[in-house]
Length: 274
Ligand SMILES: [Zn+2]
Image (tube, rainbow, N blue to C red; front, side, top):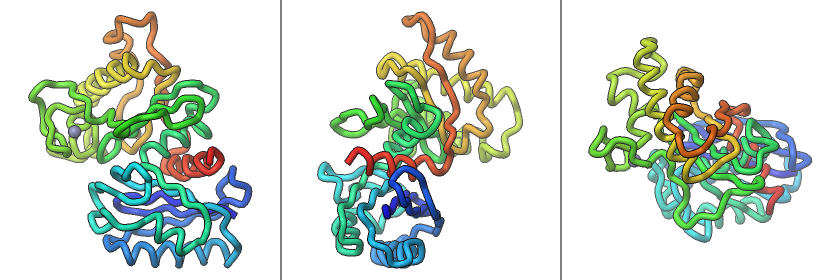
């Protein structure tokens, strides 16, 4: 039996897998702000889901950046109490098996590239557009090598533009993320019905996708995250077609298939690679 986690800022998803390829039982619980409480919750939910069966390996996605050795969280936008704590060490102590930690956007990308909308493609660019914007480049169903991580949401699309959550200005996240949209238009994305506003947001996203395309040269772009429920894909594709002049045609742009489970599927894929 295997255990996979997706530790988000608001909720944690915890699932078991009997064969290491498909998910069995899944449980969603609020993420405790306190690290020690978080560790207790892991133990409790894992006991419940596994019925005391032996766990062979654990893979978990976490928000924010991990240290180079992937043992502890260096940053976290929402769960500050977890920063600098020995997450990998505590999981090893609890489950007494190999533990693999990875950034959650990287795992969601790997999940969509392996089991979702990117399956069958060689180079997948994945962007998740929800409260913030994250993403990763997946090559041959592996997270592409990188030095400092991937941050496609923090590419500048407007010089000296709208403020971003990271302290910068004019980033893609400032214009297309849930928090950015709320800042610019004064209401939540799900409450915006004006097609002109959505067309504008689609154009900003297309600028980000044209940049992503010239740098990452993907076969397919997969877009995940809650904002994609409202953001018009066809407008985005039409603008990308217009903006991307250097290549004969843009890559396919599709919406993710496995939604909120992408991180858990990515964790499964990570177990299979390890
Ligand atoms: Zn930023």
